[in-house]
Amino acid sequence: MNKAFLVLDDGRIFEGKSWGAVGITFGEAVFSTGMSGYQETLTDPSYHKQVVAMTAPHIGNTGWNTPDNESKKIWVSGFVVRNPSPTTSNWRSEGDLETVLINQGIVSIQGVDTRALTRHLRRRGAMRVGIFSGQSMNREEMVIEVRKSTQMSGAFLVADVSTKAPYIVKAKGEKKFLVAALDLGIKAATPVALAERGVEVHVLPFDSTAEDILALNPDGVFISNGPGDPATMIDTIETVRALLEERMPIFGICFGHQILGRALGFATYKLQFGHRGINQPVMDLITRKVEITAHNHGFALQAPTEGTFTTVYGAGEVTHVCLNDGVVEGLQLLDRPAFSVQYHPEAAAGPHDASYLFDRFIALMDSERAKN
Image (cartoon, rainbow, N blue to C red; front, side, top):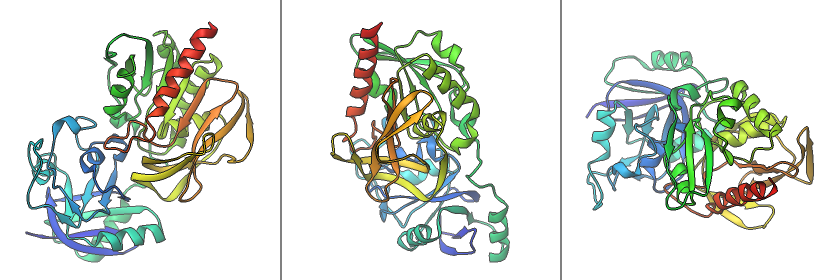
């Protein structure tokens, strides 16, 4: 097994062993705190152009199960683990994790002290990183190559991950609503969660206009998660503003939450190291309940967390905050049918504390329908 190196753009280098595909890869260094759910992480389009380090030390024990994929491929740029499982032990498993990484060309590294790496990223912040295996560059050359790679701030990545053509996910049972879902990097579990509630979901490319969306005569619009810097999504932000003018019920998550916030006039900023994993505590400021939630975001909204705020679309309020650092995790308008959260209510691979948000969206569409 060859030596491999994980090289950060501040010059810190971690030595390990090659795992998965052999080669060189670059991306933003981030860490995910979930004890499970590595497959959902790998196939989540929101991780496009990121090198993900798993803080849980033992990864791969449940193998690979095709039904658990959140998209058709692995999207991470690279994968970092401490101790990959030497065996697969799960009755649903169709194969082992490393074989999938090799087959999809995902350069990875094992044997890294992921605790030390995580502490370094928490202290210094997310940064560019490279994984180098099967090559002969010296340490100085590797650092130079990492510093030549692109940064996440200012990155426009949605075009890479969005569907190229519209498709439909049929409602399960009686069709009660039709929702247009703007695909900025949508996870497969999200349309399924809506379909289970009687919603027919029309998944549309990221560059669909307000006219394209309204032509479907939808009951509501869903704005999905996705990768990149929300400040780059100028056209999508204008589309959301046009939908707000039409009083269209809107539900945004993750990237969609940031885009709704920017449509309301708020700025976004880069978090020091982001929130990633399936164990992030969030408080619902309306019910005062605490939810354990699934996150994957490196940007956040600048919005007031106390009282109401004023926008051109009327009053609004922040509805959720992260209990770890006070980051805005949800907002809603009081005079228009629109709300959003910074996390994943479909929560594959769990938890499911926030699944009620889909029901809140259903209730919002039902209420608007009753007015018309």
